[in-house]
Length: 168
Length: 168
Length: 168
View 1 (cartoon, rainbow over the protein chains, first blue to last red):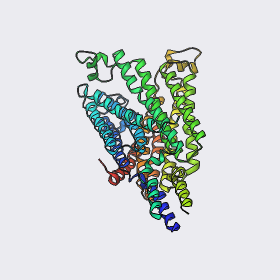
View 2 (view 1 turned 90 degrees about the vertical axis):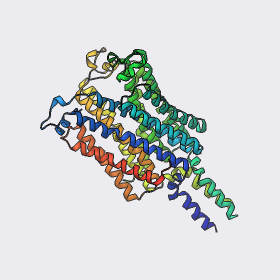
View 3 (view 1 turned 60 degrees about the horizontal axis):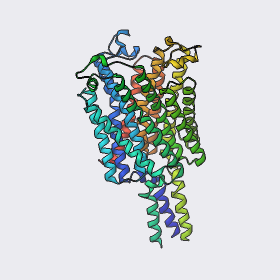
View 4 (view 1 turned 90 degrees about the horizontal axis):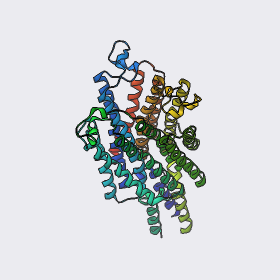
């Protein structure tokens, strides 16, 4: 009898513990939305590359070989559209990375699934709107409001983390 | 009897496993300090926005509408104080994000609480000093030393992670 | 008897639960490679500092005191080599941080160790090659190919995360 119990304890805590986190609904929801916003952020890299090649605008002399038979210093310059995509990418780094970090801790505090989903959906939606507004140069305050909404979600999650586990 | 035991095993490993990580003192301390330094980092965003509006200096043409009745190209320029806050923000990204990532793994290696708290407190303190020194343009080496201290902590934590779990 | 069992349950789920994650082979491998690529990324900071001092090129007026007896505005300028290291550092942030975030979730989905190691090794190798190609200004497409390989790994891991836990 004890032997049986031990094996059950083992199975639910050792390798399955890995899967354990992934059996929690809140953690699954977090993983889904975290993966989505990170993929969205990573796509800014290829988008920058696309604009660089389309406009023939490079940051490094060796890159000009992609469009020129020999290294061409004149192609090493800045372009408004490329810089716009790069600013959007940096803004993603500044906001999506904190969301993922705080969101992980938030998911571990065991919030209600509905409350967690509300946070995750608002954030993902706001950052997709932010990218559309930034790259498309939509009139303000579209980008400003989506940016603010994207900041409020991590602040709300950080508040729950701190009020649940505060240990200074 | 076995039935009772099973339910106890269940309650301590399945949904409560979520909360399980958050019952560990070291992980609670990590969560607290990680949330604090991420909040500090995120506040650089609104601070940049504040300086932009106060100085009337924008990165995008559509943003000039905030202070001008119509889009004004002359407001799309750089300002030393705005750039200073942006450099501080980027430096936070370069240092606080590694702290959070390595700190999570470090907390999972089960260090002594006192040792973990020492790491976390030194890091949080050094980064707050760094921001004060950067935004306030305090004489060097105030910013340099706080930056170095903020680098040593993640290096020390990474050393423990690698010496504990190395699997190449 | 039950008392004994309880203590065993306790020991395998409470403080040891921390170590629990670190007993999983895939998680150990992830921790190892995550620590390595983060350390690599962090070293770009001191490398930037090294080039700044070697070339006498600073971003802040107060920093010129390191090489000049009094603040010297002429030292506040940009230098091609310093900017090259900074671009490499930013590219690391844009690619290594997503790897660490998605890789953590990926490791928790319980992949085969061999498959996980393949992902981690390819990523670490591609990012080290990327840095060598960037800082050394090697002819393209060396940097381009290592960058693309470094993007494919997180995409592949994100695909597994989303196909395993999708909860929208």
